[in-house]
Amino acid sequence: MAQQFEDKFNRKFYYLRLSVTDVCNFKCTYCLPDGYKPSGQKNSSFLTVPEVKRVVSAFAECGTSKVRITGGEPSLRKDFIDIIDTVSSTSGIQKVATTTNGYRMEKQVADWKQAGLTHINVSLDSLDPRMFHQITGENKFTQVMAGIDRAFEVGYEQVKVNVVLMKDLNSQELPNFLNWIKDRPIQLRFIELMQTGEMDDLFHKHHVSGVAIRNQLIANGWILKVRAVNDGPAQVFVHPDYQGEIGLIMPYEKSFCESCNRLRVSARGKLHMCLFGDHGVELRDLLQNDLQQNALMERISQQLQNKSQSHFLHDGNSGITPHLASIGG
Ligand code: SAM
Ligand code: SF4
Image 1 (tube, rainbow, N blue to C red):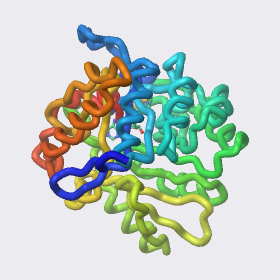
Image 2: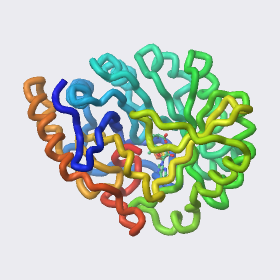
Image 3: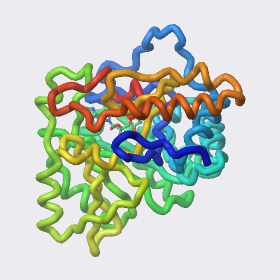
């Protein structure tokens, strides 16, 4: 193995979040409220399958064992199965995950599994179909729920479900969600709303801290699980009476960045040190043939020395990220 990717704060990077498209068919109020609009960038094609192979191989060679394929909506890629297959067949990659809005899951999840997808996160912001529609702009609640059921049928032992916590919208749904996961092996992950460049007053209107949920969980006998080395930043709680688990993702907590173990590559081949960083580093010129792998690893390694200790969200600075679909949430 080449030298492991590590930054100057001794953080090691086991986890790559790879965006494969900016495009999305949903209009989530906190992400693409007006729907997807092409960016008009000159080099506007998304990473090809051979480019994906090269970038993932370089990361794997330097210690990365987990890749999350994200977007936009990754399942909109016509070659999504080839992408999963390419990532999962890369030596050293043990976990291949995706984050999806679940729209295509019912029909396609069996093929995703067969291609080597080991973990799934589905976004489902409400258990009330009308609220789901209001938040995502799409009346697709039934399809997404059917997709989750199908994932269990085809053999996934656990499905993670992402819920963006929003005051006055879904923040009162904890009892319903708890009821839903009592007998289902779902890890339900409440994500605090994050402020991005294109968000106006939505953040101030709807942001709510996960602390109230954490306090309720602890008061009701939920216990914090110990983190494994390539786990994400979620604080995961378990309870003996529940098959499901609760994860809390609270990027505004002080210690959030201490355990950062992930890097991001955008759908157009830029390396991002942080979801809320201020620039992306071009990798695409080094993805055009297999002979440049060493140069690629070297560039990533060098750039890691510029990774900041923490994001600056507390100061209202969300970097260049206009919305999470743009560099892969
Ligand atoms: N389209 C896929 C989906 O929605 O699952 C994958 C991409 S999406 C950008 C990844 C995750 O980021 C989703 O769970 C979404 O809810 C979350 N997300 C998007 N914008 C967010 C924001 N401003 N704050 C918190 N979470 C956000
Ligand atoms: Fe699309 Fe996901 Fe953004 Fe919703 S959160 S608009 S599903 S990319």
